[in-house]
Image 1 (cartoon, each protein chain N blue to C red):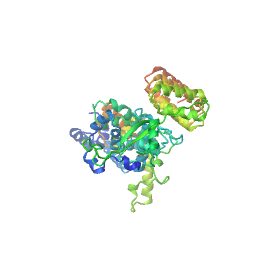
Image 2 (image 1 turned 30 degrees about the vertical axis):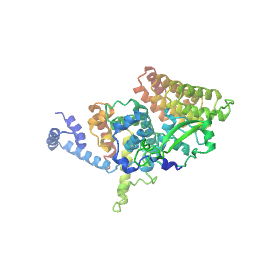
Image 3 (image 1 turned 90 degrees about the horizontal axis):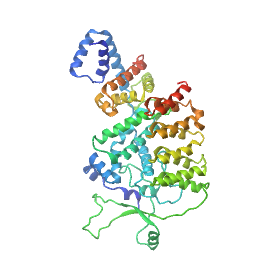
Image 4 (image 1 turned 45 degrees about the vertical axis):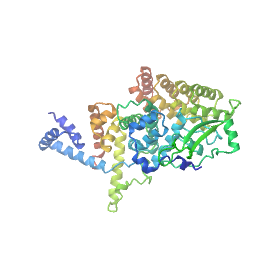
Length: 203
Length: 324
């Protein structure tokens, strides 16, 4: 008996047509369906890992955060009351775990996600018309950005990531982080000012 | 309107957070204020420079790895899963977080396979085959658990109207094993460690933790150490967490143990356990590492965020003594 074939439950085309909503999956999970949670994970986990990766700049730390987020989600899903969307709830858990998590200082935050080790070329810039000076300059900007972000508190950093990279509105960030909009603005301004100080001489 | 407010609006403008009236007022102000014009120019350049550094999307391999580790983690901690059938030590201890061990048994066993086809499933478990005399004997001696139906293409697995249709399912046969030996026996300790991580009954987990502690485990044994760490950080039962912590306090310094104590200090809901974590970090083998930045940061955080006044006091003393 081949384990892989046995465990492919439904063929892909049928599954896509029958794709249940998040709240239906949650109810199935609460009723004891062991596959429901896995479906929720595969639907939402890329975003969780992306936020964790952007926050930590380190794949190992990002995986740790990912695990913690879904562990908490798994433990809490039985008590989920449907007062918000599952994605919103998961988002909040992700933010809280990121903020609580402390990255290991000895890891180099710039290089961990770069496949080339010392080579910091971002593939999106790897074009034949870029000069060596352009590449070096972008590498320097990358370092300055990461350096500036590391001087921020976890909450300030998270606000900047959610605003700049995730494109969230301040109102949405405030809701996710359970803060007032005024507090979020304060965090954002601090982050912008630090980045401005770091990059002013080279932009 | 005060000039400072316009300065704040500049930052909000860059991120399209102003309404139309605010934008209009800001534009009027910019026409009259060269400082703000210069500032917004700088901010625009900065925004563009950062946007040219789009943080990389997560690669598929990292996501797959994270999913696999999550699967193992939850399999080890999920109390609703049935007992494992033990088929040799080496393949059976599952670390909740860091080193998943996927065997054919574990794969079949998951009422919890993550992602349809998201994992590369390795190996297959030679389960009992239907209809042989030996299997009948095995089924009589053992306990059947974890029946998993195999789905057919239509999404249904049983059509009650078709009595002669094939139905396919897998199950585990669990044979009870009685074991007796000395606490110092490493095999006994490993079984206890397995029980500490996987056993559903908290009383049994507590007994296992106490027995491991009494046995004076070898700190260099990675499996027992990891089982204790996982129990201390993740167990639902505070008594189990406390017992695991008591054992780990006597372990020599090791990075994974330090991290585990820090997680308890930062995350544990019970102040009593957080206090014990503090005691572990400032006394014993950990105390020599008070300058560790992770330890210092955790105490700084507790000084500000902990709801318990005693913990905040302890954190303040640590911060002051270490001249932060």
